[in-house]
Length: 154
Image (cartoon, rainbow, N blue to C red):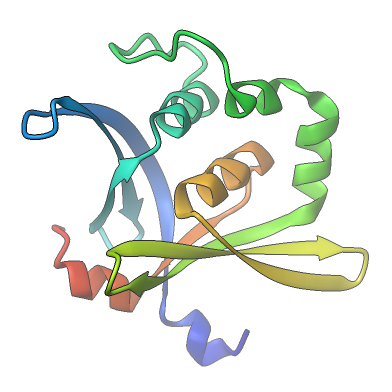
């Protein structure tokens, strides 16, 4: 990636996840707040609830939030598998939340994976890519244009 493109990225310095009740939909809505190096917050809504629960467990081992999944998913199991964590740490390079589909309102992330001397990029659901980055202890970035488009708070 070129150095000019690198200047367009904001590093995520912390995150939090939570669930709110959507009274119109009569259901739960998963939310991820990404706190950026420039002091702004980038927020993603309608995150799958199993990702919110799993990220809470990865970020905070003592999570006792109101919303806890009653049965475990793949996302709950993966952080507990040492061989998976070891391979993720060797393979995942970083995650870039870098595009927004205007028609659907959905963000897309690019995960960079390194295999020996080859780096490949895969497009992913941002919350899933963030989850992998957290397991691997790798950085997450948000493209500046997305923060400007959403008018997120500072």
